Amino acid sequence: MFRPRKLGKSVFLWLLAASVAVSAPAWEKSARAASGPQGSKAAPGRSDIVAVAGKRIVITRPELELAMARYRAATGKDRLTEAEINGLLEDLIRRRLLLQIATVQAYKKDPAVVAKVKNYEDSLIVARWVEGKIRSKVQVSEQEIRAYYDTNRQLYRTPPKVKASYILLRTRGEAEMILKKLHGGADFAQLAKQYSIDLPTGQRGGRIGTISESRPPSALGKVLFLLAQGETSEIITTKAGYAIFKADKIYPPGFKPYEAVHNNIRDQLFRKKARDSFKQIVQKLEKNAGIKIFKGPLGEIEQTSGNAPAPAGKQKVAAAPVVAGK
Image (cartoon, rainbow, N blue to C red; front, side, top):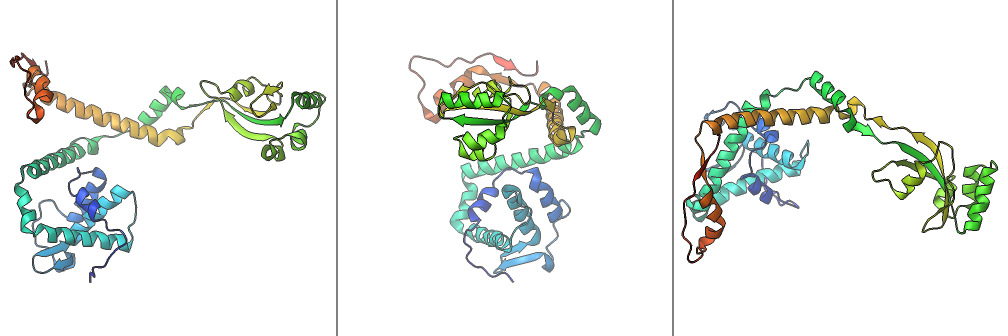
């Protein structure tokens, strides 16, 4: 049995907002599955009733499941907690209670509310039509995805990288001494541990990680990407001191594997096909609709909106129509 109780944060405001939001396919499918056959007007069975308030308010399981589907789509959650489900149920009851108030019912005749309801209804109908007429029929084959990847492979190029190390010294004299040791065959990592004033990297043998080539190249990139693998740089003056760099390993440019970009390409091709299909349909509608757009009145909308007076001494002149679809 439903027992109203206070929750830390009610989702009441979310539910009010969701009740006027444009339908989204993510929860629309769940809503259709939860609501049963379209157009069914049979009275709910007792097993479908999840809460009542007096004799006039009945909350059914499909209504609660619809609210849950909307909430999951809005929050990105796969599963809801018991507290969240109870919160949604409480909010459904509260909204029904509010709708019984006479002053609330009066807003049904408010022109602004009527206009928003009509706009919501139109948006819902169009969204459902697009889902059924276009999106549900769009198919992207594996061959199309592979062909796009092969044709546009440069889009998935990975830049060259360098795994690098460095030794940082306080003075140029110290840096010249270290460089001389390196030219004599001394071990770079050991010198970094012994002499580098950058203690964290020094304890790691001077390793600073892997650096990717950028465009435009960074100051560090201008040094590292001129070195051969295993080569050390000359002395580089920095704000922190005098540095000597080493290119430990060079990774040549490559390409992201097909598997890594497969889903991204599929979604991209799906959206393009859906847009193209939608465009073809509306262009046909526009061509046969005899649309006329009057530039003159459109240009005056901003001036006359809010009952602003038209500039003195100017008369409105009807402009020649622009006929769409020609």
